[in-house]
Structure formats: C-alpha cells, structure tokens
Length: 154
Image (cartoon, one colour):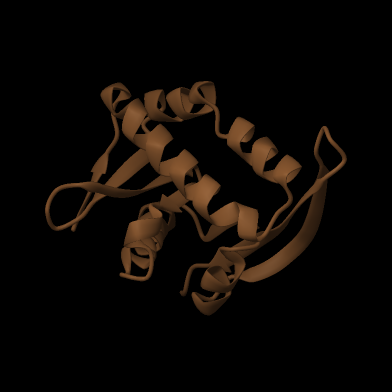
C-alpha cells in the first residue's frame, strides 16, 4: 500500500472514491436529504481547491489501484473515505495514521468532524468528542456529526 499526493489529474478518482463511499455507506445512517447535502458538500470545486492547495492524498492498494483518500488542511483531517470494497482491510487506519503523522509534525492537535459511520473509528484511535452538531438540510432532514480532537503525545 502506498499514499501519494493527488494532482488535478486525480479529480475523477477522488470524486469517485468520495461519491461511491457516501452513496454506499451513508444511507444506512442518514436520511436522503442529509446524504444529498453531504454529496454537495464534497463538490468538485471543494475537491479542486484542496488539490490545488496540496492537501489531498490518495491511498493505492498493493496492486496500485486507488482505494481511499484523505484531505489535510493545517491541523484538520477531513474528507477521509475508503471505497466500500476496501473497507475492513486496514486502509482507513493507514490513512488516519498518515494524516496524523503529517499534522503532528507542525501541530499539537488533530481536529475533525466525524460522521456517524466514522465516529467509533476515531474514538478507538484516541479521539474525544468536543461538540455535537446538527445541520438542517434543505428538505428538512438533518445531518448529525461530532467535532473531535486528538492531542499529540508528548
């Protein structure tokens, strides 16, 4: 497995990882309006902006196929997705470890917004909840998530 910095030519790959994962996983946790809101939140414009800032990485599996992605902006870990067919094989943990190492080189804490499907993963990795949020979506559904933090071990 290998993690590489994404370039603009990787937009289609990042988009596919994000959208396929949201469409497969999030309907089990959220109503349709929240899933649609989440898909719109991770728009091409948002992904392009992060790629151009040098904040996006892609995880390639042992065969060199894209399996996941993560975005790091300053001390924030976000847009971490692993394609459904690769979940449960340690790819998400590898992306989290990678992002934490990069962030802890400059900062003493990692912050993130955890969706319902991801919250337990972060709790198991030593993150704690700092705030619970509910965002109302255009059709009246709600997107619920937690702000989380992990401090660097000194």
